[in-house]
Amino acid sequence: MGSKGLRVVVGMLALCFAVLMAHAQEKIKVSGLITTRTGETIIVRTNERGVVTVVLDDDTKVQQPRGLIGVRKRSMSAAVLIPGLRVSVDGTSQDATHILAKSITFDRNDLQTAEMIQAGLTPTGEKVATNQQNIATNAQDIKANQKDIATNQQNISANQQATAANQAAIDANAVETSKRFSALSEYDTKGQLDVRFASGSAKISTEDQAALKKLAEDAVKQTGYIIQVKGFADSSGNAAMNQKLSMERAQNVIAFLIQDCNVPVRHVIAPGAMGEAAPVASNETAAGRAENRRVEVKVLLNRGISGS
Image 1: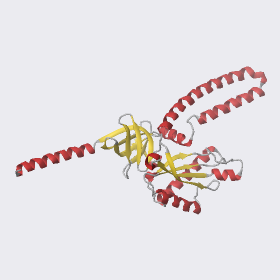
Image 2 (image 1 turned 135 degrees about the vertical axis):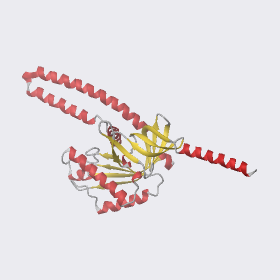
Image 3 (image 1 turned 90 degrees about the vertical axis):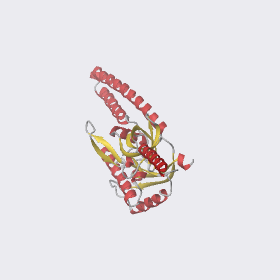
Image 4 (image 1 turned 180 degrees about the horizontal axis):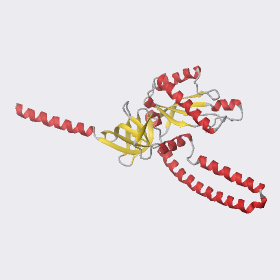
């Protein structure tokens, strides 16, 4: 082959390589539901491409739109990317089923729903409790004011209508929750630790700091591990204060894992603050309340990776 023919072949090869590289770096945007989180990747079920693997790196931005039109965005930690969360992914296509994420955005309401799923709650739980309190109040009014039974009966009827409407909302949310639960993959727990706190405190004890370091050392030996962090509080004080306190406890544990145990932020998921939910002991005793002032830390491995 002459030098001219060789140049032609080289030119064609360079053109093919450029086309392949351009295809490999194709910009892409998909939306869907996170079904699995495995370390530095998330699995998203989309309408556009079916199931895709989204790869996170140090440049991936996780954002939550703010304001009425969502132009402004709040930067978030990758720890919020939990199974059950609906997300929109902008990135580049690595192949037919893999996307390198440049940015991932999600709605605050979808995050709250995903957190409730993780906590074993439903989005209408507080509404049901409020409605039950209203019914109980009306029942007491009926007994205390026998002369005004007709008026109270109207109130009861109104509450019954509200209960029926609330039940319809519960049923609708139950369907959505069931769909999201069915999309979640099963995990094996490879390590577990409960970090305990003094009343009203979010400070991690020296003993628990040592235990967290040991847990992290064992975790990094696993391939595709994730560390799940959930914060809880006892029933002392009001619910709003306990919600905030459980969040501070979870955030302090996450910060310790990242800063002192060298756990990459991409390997941490935080379903959120659970407040007084899911007590492990009775809040009627001091010992029980001490058990409930905790942060649950679990090292999880998807069964598809662990081979279970």
